[in-house]
Amino acid sequence: MKQKNILDSRDRLAQRLPDPTQIARGTLLRRTIRHARGCSKCRAGGGHAVWVLTVTYPGGRTRQFSIRREQRAQVQQWVRNYQRLKEGLEAISELNHELLRP
Image 1 (tube, rainbow, N blue to C red):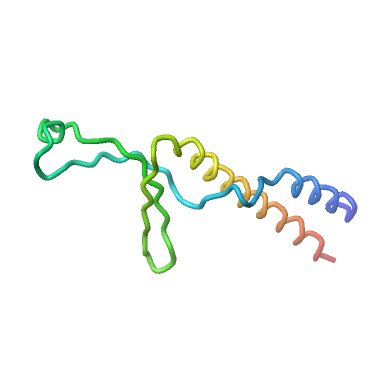
Image 2 (image 1 turned 60 degrees about the vertical axis):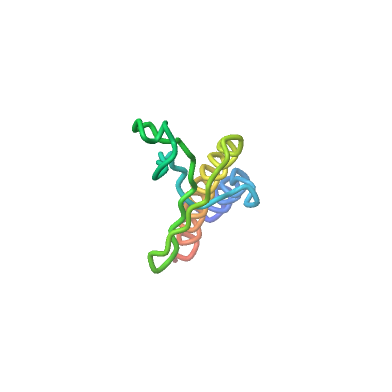
């Protein structure tokens, strides 16, 4: 690929990247919690559905953020944006590698 084409491709990719202020790394999970005692719903085996954003850090440390029902759509979008941004940066990096080749 010619250098001009690579630069044009790289610019197009960069323009399509999501807003970096609207990202969140992690996985959005639906969990069921059960109270130890005092809850008839839990005692019957139903439990309570909750949304959790799980993020794993280097060294295996994991953090979980409880997500309110009304935040779920926003957090889902942030996680999708993170994945799109990461894929876009990888593609741009590959194009930059092409520019380094003689």
